[in-house]
Image (cartoon, rainbow, N blue to C red; front, side, top):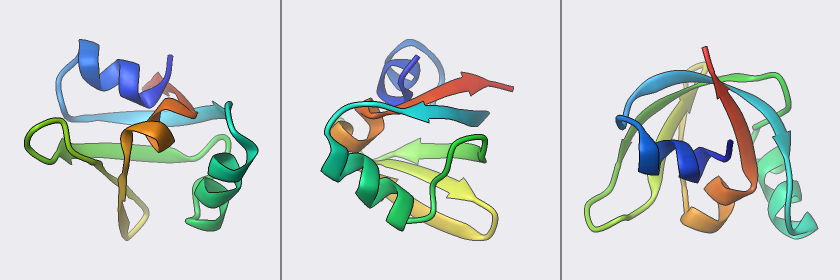
Length: 78
């Protein structure tokens, strides 16, 4: 399940684990450069109003992901 699909079907908070990245290579590379990696545990903190970016936390870092970046991130709930 992608991160974007998870948000559309579930509550806006939860502990998740990244299982893989799919989609456009440039977006996947950007996610790796931001510090996201396969097997990493993340926490979905919330979403900006009007279907805005998703706010996630990993370690002590927070980042906002646009819909296209969230669509490339495959996750599983913990």
